[in-house]
Length: 191
Image 1 (cartoon, one colour):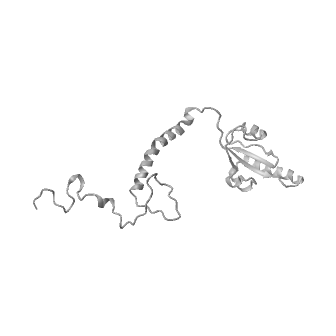
Image 2 (tube, rainbow, N blue to C red):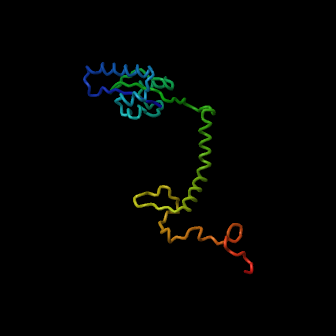
Image 3 (spheres, rainbow, N blue to C red):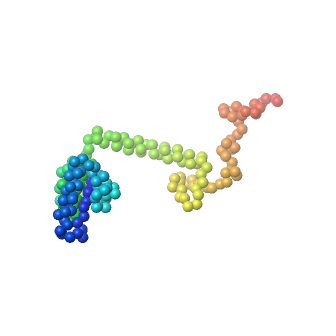
């Protein structure tokens, strides 16, 4: 993963370019002296990524220009490049994360593997549980809103809550384990 700090030379007179390069080198010096790359990019970079602290994303070999690729793939995490002259300006890059190509050792990926296995095992049960909660709930989807959590084959039907019998009203009046509910007489008593 890379982040950039960029100063543009586009549409600027040739006489301004040495000044822009000197400015880029001064910013590089500040970064190398401990100032936050992300904060410097947010405040002083002229690149389109400035608002994101210069974050560019992840790249593989062959996705960058040869000159930049040669520089970047020699760098380690946290390294900051020298000022690089491009067709449109001056660029400073930092490596936020570096992943080696090929198969990773098990210790490096064990947590990710465990997380994926647990996720795959829990999702079906979680979906069933959420569907049950949804079926047993009274929901009103107001006009203008989309029912994004709909369960297939079980759309929400708006009903008047006073007219719809609740699940408690549908149950028999018997209490738990066949015992009469409070205030009822036991079956078979002669009273």
